[in-house]
Structures are given as C-alpha cells and as structure tokens.
Figure (cartoon, rainbow, N blue to C red):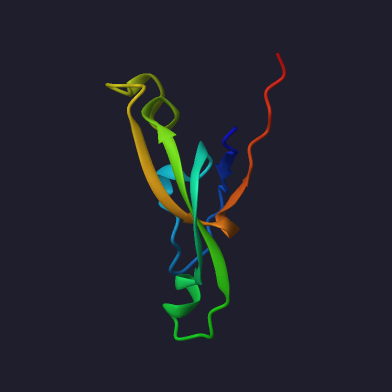
Length: 92
C-alpha cells in the first residue's frame, strides 16, 4: 500500500522547493527518487546536506476541491522529505 503524506503548510522566508498550491494537501508517495543535496541550502551557496526526494501524486479533487474539472486526474510533484509528514488517518 502506498504511503499517504501531507505537504507541510509552512511559510518560511527565502528560496523553498514546495509550491504554495501543494502546501497542506495530501497525496500518495508514488516512489522514492533517492537522496540529493538540499537545493534550499544550495540556493544561498551554503553546504547542503542530502535529503530524500519523493514523487508524490495528488488528485485534482485534493488540490482544487469542487472546482476540479476532472477530479480523478492526477498531478505528480517531486518533493523533499523535510516537506512531508504522514497524513492523518480519518476515523470512520
């Protein structure tokens, strides 16, 4: 089973690699892409630690709600692990 994650709804200043429209949204990890140097640190010429990068799949319904023209269509985004947290499970 694929892991459900939520993009952290943070608003740090500066160069960040998580698009605004994905923050706070839930998706499914489609796959791990490996570890790469953190571009948020590289942008400022700082030594960059390696971070895991994931491809996360979101449905249009998750991103745009009732305004989604095709709710089951998907968007894949590559996001670093420090922007992701486990999605809360919904109680029935």
